[in-house]
Image: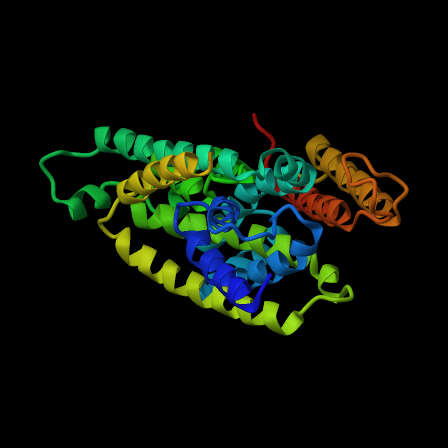
Amino acid sequence: MTSAQALFMGLLQGATELFPVSSLGHAVIIPSLLRWSFKQSDPSFLPFLVLLHLGTATALVILYWRQWARIVAGFVRAALRGRIGGEDERLAFLLVVGTIPAGLAGVFFQSYFKQLFANPRAAAGFLVLNGVILLGAELLRRRAERRDASRAEQEAAFRPAEALSFKAALLVGACQVGALFPGISRSGATMAGGLLAGLRHQEAARFSFLLATPVIAAAGLLEVPELFKPGVPLGLYAAAAVLSGAAAYASARFLIRWFRVGRLDPYGVYCVLAGAAALALLR
Amino acid sequence: MKGTPLATGLLVLAMVLVVISILYALGTIGWFANSADTHHYKHAALFFVLAVLAAVGANFARNRPLAG
C-alpha cells in the first residue's frame, strides 16, 4: 500500500464509518474498483485497520466525552448500588445490554464472516441490501407519523434514547451484528432499529454512535499488539488514523445536525445505486 | 432481600466466566478461537467483561424485593 493509498483509506474509513453506508463495504469495493492490489482480508492489513478504528473511536469519545463521563459514572454508581436511578444510569445499562450481542458475535464470528464475504461482489450485493433496509425503515416510520404535522412536530412525537426499553436496546444492539457482513452498515442497521423502536431520528443516531464506540474501540484495542510486529510503518498508519478520526468527527457532527429533521432516505438511495453500479462494474 | 437464588446463580456464573476467561488467556481452551494463536486474549477479555456483568447482575438481584 502506498502512502497516498493509506491516507485515502484513512479518510474513507472515517467518513463512511458513521454514515449509514458501510465503511467495510466501501473499503472492500473501492480498492477493487481502482484496481489496487492490497486486500482487506490480508493479515498484514490488520495493524492498519487497528489504528483506523482507534482513530474513529477517539473521535467519538471526544465528540461525546461529557456524555461518556456521565455514562461511566452512572454505570459504576448503579452497579455498586444494585439499582438503576437516573437517566445517565439507565442509558449506561441500555448501552451495556445493546453491546452484548455485537461483542459476542464480533469475537466468535468476525473472522469467519470476513473470510466468507470479504469479496467485492458480495460487499456490493450487501450494500444494495443495506440501502433496502434504510429505505424500508423509513417507509415503516412514515406510517407511524402524523401526516398533517411539520417535520419538527413529527420528530417531537417520538422518544429519546433513555426511554428505550431494555428489550428494545438489546434488539437495536443486535442490529450491529449485521455489520459483520461487508456492505451492511453498523450505524445504518442500528439507526434503522432505533427508528423502529420509536426513537427520534437524532436520538437514533446518538444511540447508534454511543453503541458503536465501545465496539469500535474494543476492536482496535484488542489488536494493539499487532502494531508492534516488525515492518509496520507506524508513522504512516498513524497519519491515516488521524485523518480517519478527523473525518469521523466531522461526519458525526454533520449527521447529528442532519437528523434534526432529515431522514435515512438519501443514504438508502445512495447504497442501492452505488451497490448496483459496483455489481455492474465488478463483473 | 439478600441471598436470593437468582443472585447466587449469577454469582456462581460470574465465577465460572472468570475461570473460562483465565483458561482462554492461558490457551488451555480454544473453543471457537483461531487455532493459530496460543493465547486467546480477545475471548478472555470478552468472558471477563461478561463475568463483571454477571456480578453486577447478582448485585441487582440481591437488592430486588421478592414478589408477593
